[in-house]
Image (tube, rainbow, N blue to C red; front, side, top):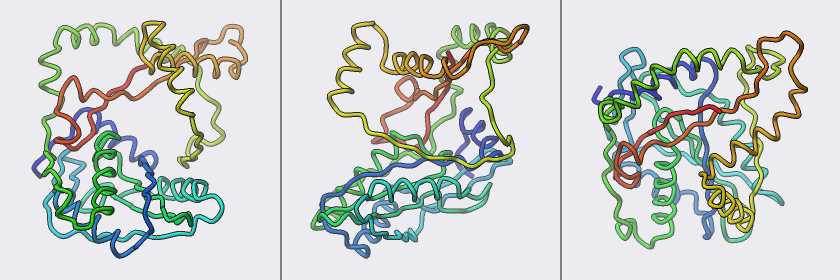
Length: 291
């Protein structure tokens, strides 16, 4: 096995044992759907980028992309009057289908939804341990460009770096912050024990639900302007919004209860602090934070 899993990927190994840990992306391609052409172009792109022949050794925390031919099958469904809802149902089905815990397997599951308008939706559900969303956006964009091109060779594809270093270099470069994090760890652990747990009917039920909604471009622009005005990031502002939404559902602390706080956590992308752009390096570069 050529590559080592980074710190966040090692945490994902544990999450994958508890419930399927998959992610999904869907794009709209403005062209008629030709299933044979789509499968051929996807397969050619995966081979060109080196994203075939994946194998995971969970015990050793190592992985490999050995290359070879892509075996791509893209199930096609009729979207009817609501292709987005049809895609949402397919996403919920596929994110609850676990990938193998180890060995050689294909970490990508594609699907297509016809919408009857000379266009179609291309979806991808993938094992989150292989990539973050930024890498998948690059992949999906290249797949769309390759499908729309008259010839495959008209869209040159990069041979991605698939074996990035682990987070060791980042820790060494940011060692003062790392040490301060270790110092703060006891307080963080205590804070976790003060936060209320969400009500779960069955803790053994690992089913993943899927809901979606659209944010109009104008609303998102106002959100960005508001964040800029407050001097915070958009993620900071989303934290505040989620906390305000969740807090009334809590109902307040019970007298004498240990868990008296509401907390929200978020996965964050640390690629810019550590590794090259997603157009050059494939993988997940993630961390988490809690408020």
